[in-house]
Amino acid sequence: MKIVVCAKQVAMLGDEVEFTDDGRSVDPDYLDFALNEWDTFATEEALQIRERLGGEGEVVVVTAGDDNAEEAMRRCLAMGADRGLRISIDEIADRDPISIARALAQVIEKEQPDLVFCGVQSADSVQATTGVALAELLGLPRVAVVRKLDYDHDAKKACVSRELEGGLIDVVEVDTPAVLTIQTGINEPRYATLRAIKQAEQKEIDVVEAGDLGEPAASMRRMFVPAKGEGAEMLNGSPEAVAQRIAEIVKERLA
Amino acid sequence: MAGVLVVAEHLRGQVRPVTLELVTAAKDVGGPVTVLVIAKDPSALTGQVDVAGVDEIVTVAVEAEEFENDVYQAALEAVIAERQPDAVLLGFTVNSMDFAPAVATKLGLGYASDVFAVSPEGGSLVAQRSYYGAKVNAELEFPGKDCVMLLLRPTSWAPAEGSGSANVTELAAPAVESHARHVDFEEVPQGDVDITTAEFLLSIGRGVGEKDAIGQFEELADRMGATLSVSRPIVDAGWMTNARQVGQSGKTVKPKVYLALGISGAVQHLAGMKTAGTIIAVNTDPEAAIFNVAHYGAVADLFEVADELEK
Ligand SMILES: Cc1cc2nc3c(=O)[nH]c(=O)nc-3n(C[C@H](O)[C@H](O)[C@H](O)COP(=O)(O)OP(=O)(O)OC[C@H]3O[C@@H](n4cnc5c(N)ncnc54)[C@H](O)[C@@H]3O)c2cc1C
Ligand SMILES: Nc1ncnc2c1ncn2[C@@H]1O[C@H](COP(=O)(O)O)[C@@H](O)[C@H]1O
Image (cartoon, rainbow over all chains, first blue to last red):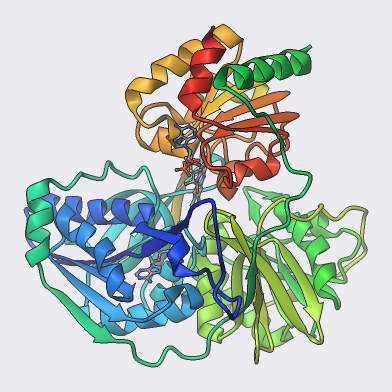
């Protein structure tokens, strides 16, 4: 039994930003990096399935990115994934999600997994696209936005709950191997112990060069800081002054 | 055809509001507007999408009772092949996420999701979407693409109104094997409170940090005469039931006052509260997206403000 988890290193902006000279991306000096929140849930789900099946099988983490992106993968390895695969691509932020899916498909195809997990979306670019594009490229069934998963390895089927708008659950039976995009709240991601983090340093990460990513589905023209519309009226001063103004506004509006 | 193909979204016999927003957006793209209805019984739905601005309605009658991704994918691909639209518009919704990227990948379309503005420029399209927690916006182009698929952010366009008189064309459904089959719907449990009727919501997000902090805000809500609501991470962590969750996968609320403490303002959260009467936000990050929709904002530590509000 083999589960592939796609994990992305996402970028976060603080309260300042500068763009690169071509105006098409954010200067990396202004970014902090972390493992995408959705991918921690995907990793946990893979680990739990393996535990339920008696610990047999392998959980492989795949990322497309530069060597800095290995940090995110190490987090998954520290949680308990067995090995990592990095597809070497610089500036993933410049790529459209379908191109990223092509890069992922090239290596995942060779792994012949029973299940492939992606997150529903990446926090920095909110595409919600990569997983289902990947399924198409792999020729596999898929289900997006999975909040509950019941996998029957022997029957090659899974019963999943998709979470629709308003929280309505769409119960779906899917044939496996399949690609599932995992929603937050499906489980409680474990914390990696210090020891596990140390051990993860020793786990193997293979690096492969990306093949042909095909024609991009979109190209970035420019990035910019959105013009502040009306904007909020800012309440300044001490916490006491702020609280007092808030209390006044509430009282006035409820009257 | 050239022109715009709008894919209608519906659930249990009702066309979803985003569909009529797509019709309005189609006018920003330009050209004749065709609405595609894929359903077991499309005739029950065509009336709901026959609004002013729609030139034609195309239906595909499929066997599946409810949405199934393989069925929708095959139907949409067949209609795109037959009609050759310049643009295909869908809502950025959970069902679209389940099949639209596969269609774009297979047909090699231009593609962008969570788009909130679109304009034609010299014969091609420019779409806007955001990055990094909505702190940065971007314009995307689709060079060399004859057809562009866009998943549009709900509530970014006004719904199209007025009755229409579009012709209905029926197209045959392609044969397809469904690998992800709908079994059932499970309703959202009722829960212990109804946050949708509250006049004053005190809403807390991940900024509260830990479970032990929740009690303090329950008390504060009581003291202020507010109902406590939360963002999704609080529910995911099991600290509150989803009856109190505001947002796309929770409740849509419109209280007189929405006081948000430690909520960043992710698009799926804003979807549930941006029409509140007065929005007040407290966040340590001066660039948090919540300030873009708030009427009043304070860059401050929520605990310090909460301590003062308790007095
Ligand atoms: C399909 C789908 C559906 C979704 N549905 C929903 C939904 O219904 N509702 C929902 O809320 N989300 C939903 N989400 C999740 C959404 O994308 C965000 O992840 C979520 O809204 C973030 O919640 P948050 O703002 O509480 O947390 P974060 O984004 O982590 O923000 C926490 C904020 O707290 C601030 N902060 C930290 N410490 C302090 C302090 N001491 N004082 C003041 N401020 C502080 C930080 O600056 C930050 O802005 C959905 C996602 C998907 C993919
Ligand atoms: N560069 C990447 N490397 C590995 N997985 C990725 C990458 N980009 C996206 N993904 C996967 O696709 C999911 C959805 O991302 P997106 O489509 O970008 O919103 C993520 O949660 C990951 O599982």
